[in-house]
Length: 393
Ligand code: NAD
Ligand code: MG
Image (tube, rainbow, N blue to C red; front, side, top):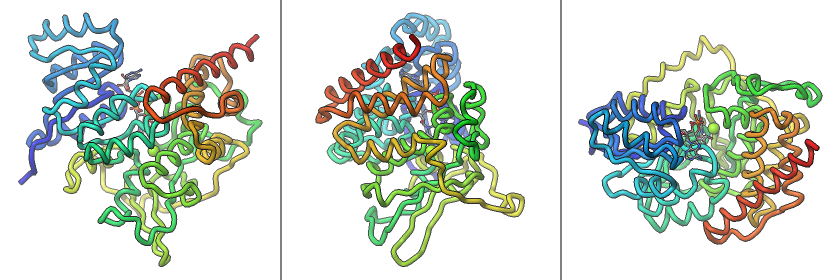
């Protein structure tokens, strides 16, 4: 018999993680109900999800999209409430009628709602890694104070969660080994990366994902963000968090113990496994992911990351060591750089250069409260934008 019915607020419902979450949820109508769905501005997609899942509330974070959402819900004859903006997100994240929040918004735009869910003591399935990079300390504190249950669904962190001691301790843990696919340009030298187009960067060999994280995977910044994420989620020092390139993306990450045991979690590269794990934990449910066929895979490969061709990983380690808000600056500069690259305003190799230059201008700042962090984030975005402008003149 299934456990209690859980009611889910899915923040970022129209994205790649949002779609995978709803795929798993729809397989288990006896276990899950959808309480709230959010999108930034894609009202038509949000409305068709509302028609299918009939949530209590729907949120568009772009306020200009709200009238169309309200009218569309009315036209569909749904009783779903139409909410808007960050306030709407925070309302559904903290709403007592939702016990589970899936944080699947991309970028720092997800930070306030992620924190609201943690403070409200939710079961929090965390995909929105940028919120951890920006506000890791605040998040860990909010989870503790709100008595929330944080379940990482980034595949590497979900794998590590599954391989750590079940009692929540770190007893005997020597190192965390994060696996990286290496992205679409693995094996290329720096000079071979000069003319990369957005579509080339978004064509990931193993995973189908949103465009921002796809570019992050191509620069290896995704792995840099994940090192910072692991530091906060698992509380181990940066020197105990290593990255190994594993092109098949079947070993999702590993935990190395002092007795020489190395535990790994494996599976086909499909986010529904991590999402099903987080949704049902500590139980296990069907996710729709095909069983792993090891003989068909035939082999696993491993190599060290190439820091010269892909400097973003090293930048992330350095920002983590610098502390005092440096990771917030790193994240903001990266978001600006990726968006400028996707718009054709910045070359692929300009991404790490811009992040480094932004950190040179603004090495960090006050980060004791969310307001201070958001001010630092905004300042770093201005610095990065002005560096792009200067580079184009
Ligand atoms: P996506 O671009 O496919 O979807 C992003 C979602 O966020 C959409 O629903 C969009 O409406 C919403 N959104 C975008 N901008 C917003 C804003 N300013 N305010 C509020 N909402 C906004 O992204 P994705 O690939 O699903 O990734 C979502 C998050 O999960 C990212 O943090 C990513 O790093 C992380 N993640 C994704 C994957 C994956 O396989 N896609 C794997 C691991 C972690
Ligand atoms: Mg990941």
